[in-house]
Length: 290
Image (cartoon, rainbow, N blue to C red; front, side, top):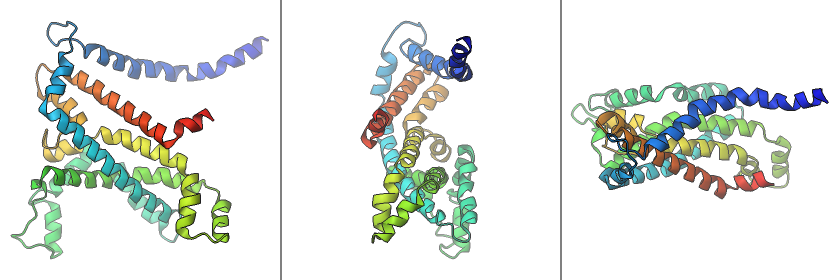
C-alpha cells in the first residue's frame, strides 16, 4: 500500500521543479506587472491613468493597425513559403540536405544581428546597392533609397526581412510533420487516381493539421511581439508596433515605467485573445475535448 502511494507522488515530484520555476520566473512577474500597472508612478495610489494615457496616445491606434497588418501578411506569406520548401525538401532529392542546411542559416541568427545586417544593407551606400551596382542592375547615380518609402512600403520591407529569418523555423516544424506521415495513405491517394494537388489538399494537409496548428500559433504569437528589427532599421515610432511602444515608454521616456507595464498587460491580453480565437477556429479545442 505504501509503495503504491509513493508511486502516485513520483510524477508530481518530477514536475515540481518546473512548476516552481514558472511560479518564480513567470507567474510572479506577470502578477506583479498587472498589479503595478494600476498604480501611479509617483504617489503609488490606485489609478487608471496609465491605461488612459495609452488609449489617448496617437501612436496606439497606429501600433495596433501596423501589428495587425504585419501579423496577417507575414504569417500568411511565411506559412505558404515554408510549406512549399518543406514539401520540396521532403522529396529527398539529391542535394536536399544541402538546401536544408542553407535554409536554416537565417534561423540561427539573433534578431540583433539580422537588424544590423539589413540596416547596413538597405542604407543608400549599403551592400545591397553595391551588389546591384556590380551586377549592372543600377548605375552609380541611380542608387535605390530603400528606407525612404511610405509607411506601408516600409512595413512590407520589414515583413520581407522578417520572413527571411522566420521561414526556416516554420519549415522545420512542417518538415518534421511531413516526415511522420503515413506514406501508405499518400500512395493510396495516387493509386485511386488522385492528382498531386488533390492528394495534397485531401490527404497530406489534413494529416499535417497538428503541425500546421503548432507552426501557426507559435508564429502568430511571435509576430505580435515583433519590434527589435523595426527599431534597428527605422528607429522608434517610424513604424510603431505594440511591443515597440512598451520599450519606448520604458526606455525612452522618464517617469512612464508604470505606463510601460500597462502597455505590456494590453499586449499580453491581445496575444492571449488572438491565440484563443485561432485555436477555437482551427478546431484545436474540439480535438482536445474528444
